[in-house]
Image (cartoon, rainbow, N blue to C red; front, side, top):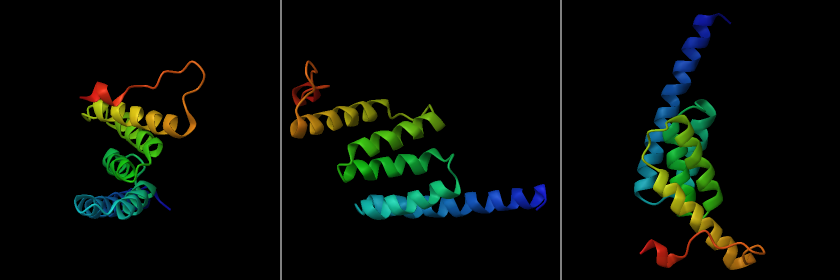
Length: 121
């Protein structure tokens, strides 16, 4: 395979990735979170450097109350594109993840829950 062939394949993968991301966006608007995760996961396989794929997948993970996975995807989106305005969103998700875990497992000895719901109001 020549370097020109590699460039063509990379461009094809990015174009196909964008199609999956566009379809994921439509699914996100109608609340099909499983569909969003499926499409964005395919997009990430094709173009693992696309922050929007991680952003949409993170939002879908949040919609399914998979907060730990949402934090992971949203953090990756920020690593790829630091100017995405998501820091507050990730902070809230992180708190919800700890709050959910604490609800079922209880806080670790000496650990204060990251925030209380009163702090959000």
